[in-house]
Length: 447
Image 1 (cartoon, rainbow, N blue to C red):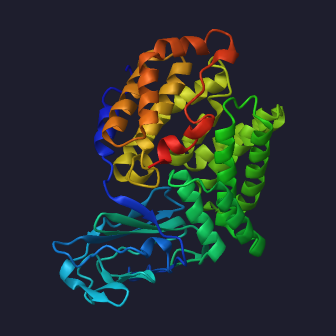
Image 2 (cartoon, rainbow, N blue to C red):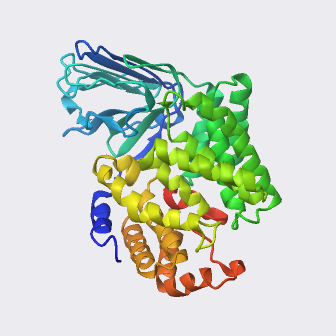
Image 3 (cartoon, rainbow, N blue to C red):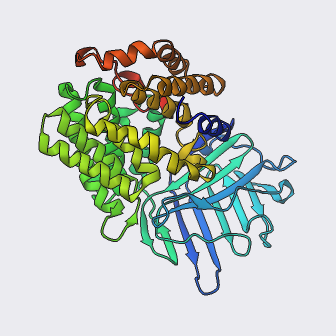
């Protein structure tokens, strides 16, 4: 590789995936975060209801310490995930209670965590200063990791009744919204194909509450996922592919204004990037030049408001434009320049950049896509380096064997692949990873 010989190995070392099982809690989730800027004092109270994932509990009383809590947020002003490191909860402070376990420490000696209830009926966590760093809003989202034994429970909060500098109050989802979000991640993680359940539950949620922003957003994302499965060539989508991209754009039209205020810069700045990708896919799929240009403009704007996360949404154009198009040069610039610039933040952003968040194979999947982009651009050595890194990391990290095989096949045929993109016949262009079939989203998100 000419440009990133040192950066890729460093990223691989930083990416070491957790062996713990990732479990999302969605039922009855809510939270109140308080902060007094005059004194620096603050608190967090996070609640989860009777979630299906709590039917089989781990035992936190086993010593040495086998439980930890981490509370974090994604402030609108930073576009970075911030918070205290995960704090171990001493096993001797846990006790058995009906239905589960309770942790009590009035002094908050471990990271300001005063109490935790972990039962089959729900979870509650209370933290306050000193020892705890208060959440400072407004935020795009807030979250808590509760790790017990070898299970990592994640509570992610996206909608807020209040979202200010001193008080952030998460809105409790409806039962349909919570179940729909769980079905969405069952599908995306490859645990079970629940596309139909996801859409039915989320549609019921928004029918009951048209301001349910998260459900609108997940409807859009599910249709975008289905579009990716249906369509190998974005310039020639199937009839069903067209239906999915239209449905995605309609859902995003409802979700974006509820989740992101462009005028004030408050909310989740990642959301416009997904909506922009749907706009672009709609434009090229229907041969609508004006809509295509609108999509490009939206993608560029999304990158401006959130460089670390949204810059790579512009990769949506790569399968659709010729290798010698100026827009493709812009995509290569993102890899050559922007990727290197934003990678400096990755040492503290493992959930966004690496494999410790909701994309368990984010890094190897990203490397595979980067290889495809460089191959189409005729940058054979750069493509080879990324394919090799994807195959190596994936083979050692439990990546789906199909994707490991795809990386190895690309590595063995990278020169031929690059030549096909540049021979003047778009009909024989190899599809990008994620275009058509089971690879859509799965190459990063499948467990």
